[in-house]
Image (cartoon, rainbow, N blue to C red; front, side, top):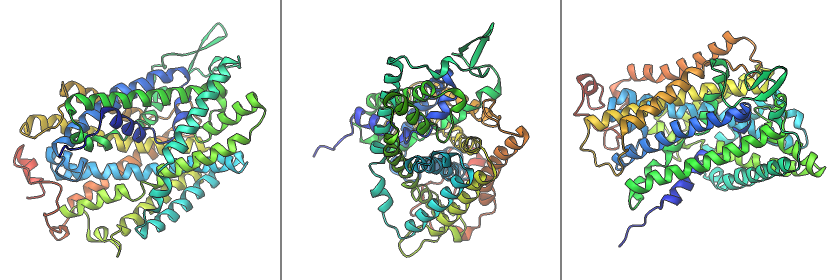
Length: 497
């Protein structure tokens, strides 16, 4: 019987849907005005494509084992770093929840005709906390209700509103309405020649103006999640790169046209990172049709998509962390599940972290600044995971040439090296306060991002350092095998030691 296979087009579309999860990131791209082309191009060519190709090689090499980045990084550098990688993949998702839910909060505000609430920091913070805990208690029952309700979220909450937004942009431009970037005067995104301002095509060579790079990069993350399908392709060596380039092209077009719509329709000073999409729709419908009621309907769809994108993943990443319990990485209290097999205690810890991070909204009056701060913390954690991913691919190509790779990245050192350098640079600028936003105390901003990164990166290393043999439940389901190759320190760090 012939084994069914996934085509390059099908996997390309699947990957694009994984990357473009919502319209949440469009205002952050629009904040860069026409310099967005450089940022989006950077994210596509030097992050999305290399990450997809590298993950495909690693996913194919270890297709017979669970664990994902835990297995990939662990086999390259030992279980300590594998645990750090899977922890970072989990914790960045946890840290990201408040930004995804804040976008849903803004959508509800516009849906009920109260757009002013989208900028109310107390409303946004409390919404994130209450909605997340409601979803967590539902998840305790082990029900798949959240997944079923949100399975059409991408199409209804992202594709349909996104297509309408782009259509309004074309109509706006064709009918001669003023374009937002034509009147921008902010020196970060505009030049001033004898009192005449023109939009920049290249950003100012200063770290403060490059700070949005990390936030934009975050919108392109997650491509590694589809790498597990590489062995389901008829000819992965030929078809997987095609799939990645299809996904990259779709992501580039959607993000670029959507961000251009926001930048064209809204004056620069009115681009709000949390409500910018809804403000754009309101301005376009009001100017072009003299009505605003379609925004209420679209806000409902966007809210549906945003909640789906955030809450459908509520239990998934924590299951990946729970899987490390088989290798004794978690204390017994975090290994426990309830009668339905749900990782209850991990979900509770997850909820506490989301609550603490959502509280940032309560103490910062400017929702855009709070939104950007949390996003910067998220990308710094995710980038460290990608650094480990690229390094693991390079090391395993050298130390484990015998692995049955279904797909091999051509010129791996160049591809993975370029990806490593790109995300390392993005990591640096993610700690820099953006010159485009009124962040208040630069020192306080840097301290918060740095503290979050250090705490969430250092905690798994401490857990690993002080783990006890009694934590290990047995190796029959372990994701890592004892490592026979590599350095002595690597062997000593293997779970079999």
